[in-house]
Length: 216
Image 1 (cartoon, rainbow, N blue to C red):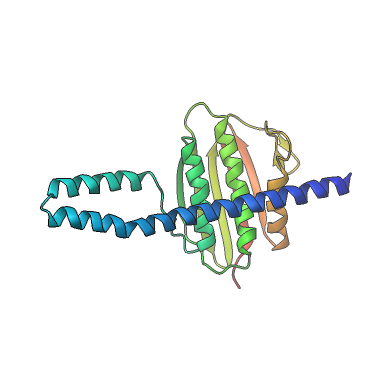
Image 2: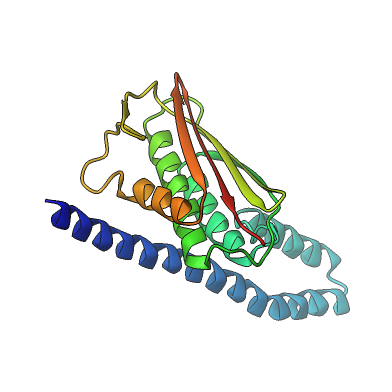
């Protein structure tokens, strides 16, 4: 039974890693596309202005502004990998009408590997997005990350449909199948680095926290 559970965990971890990295590649590809188009936009604007078509130039700028408002650029947390995974998850959440606020300031070089950081934060945000899907009222996710000395601190508050009973270190969920593997893996990674995480479920809200050594 333990071997079967372990194999399921490994399989789930591999799938999650591939999905998270795919999300990172996707958002970087999108941003590269906008950079590539920037030169063309400038040429069109230059043509309108040289022809004295100021109204058309202003209209074009307005269209560009509306388009850019619908696409979030990468966050600037100080850590490139964290920027990518947060941006991907925020885009996913906003597509599901979930209001997201992030305040984060993290060094680029950490003791955690990029993949470990991606898996921890990605799984916690996946859990938050899943919880928000069950809410009929206001949907929100609020993330805070900063350094406390040499320790990386993470705190997240998200809406949920009510208080959940606790099962071990985790909480029950309506999600079937591999639910819990992601959070267990996050706990395992944090524990391997000498860190800890904790969760708390209240009526209408769920909180996640972790603290882990991140720099020497």
